[in-house]
Length: 265
Image (cartoon, rainbow, N blue to C red; front, side, top):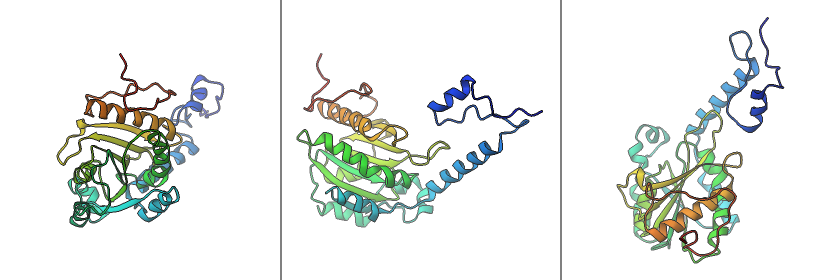
């Protein structure tokens, strides 16, 4: 007789309460139980949908406006989603109109400490859901200090490196890119944060620090803001980012006011 997924007292079953990973699914004969199989198919469909979903820039701008925060709409050199997926290089650069807007200084952000950029990446759903609440948590920390921060530049069809061009054109000392990560079968809406010191076109990925899986079910907004705040302060103190800058935060710790915290010793 086929074994069913009914051994709720096993150690594997107990572990399921602590992870979204697909463990202890049971079996029916040599196959997955019907419920587990259907859940896997649903997760796969959600991941595919997230890749193709368009970012609603107007809705994100509205959510920011409700917090009293401004935003700036921009576009990458990839004209369509199809082109974006087939030509990663185009997603790393701004189109001519967006570049001209920043060169003209129309956003009033020249020379800021931190340029903020949101790009849809491979999951616009992540940016749609998590960008505004994360930024609210981050601004709450930055408000305790004398940081100058740009409005959020919302880049349609953008990849991580597009933030380098935005930061360079603004003359920002650092840039933070909020981007939708590649969807997985456990989560189609993970937000990634990429911090780069002295942004300029042509930087490699080893110049950035990444904080991933920002979402309530993963790394929640407050601890993500804490870690970003730490990295940002360290980047300014040491004037670098990337592989030379390590995240040495303690889970659940607190950040003292002042840019040079955690530098003693």
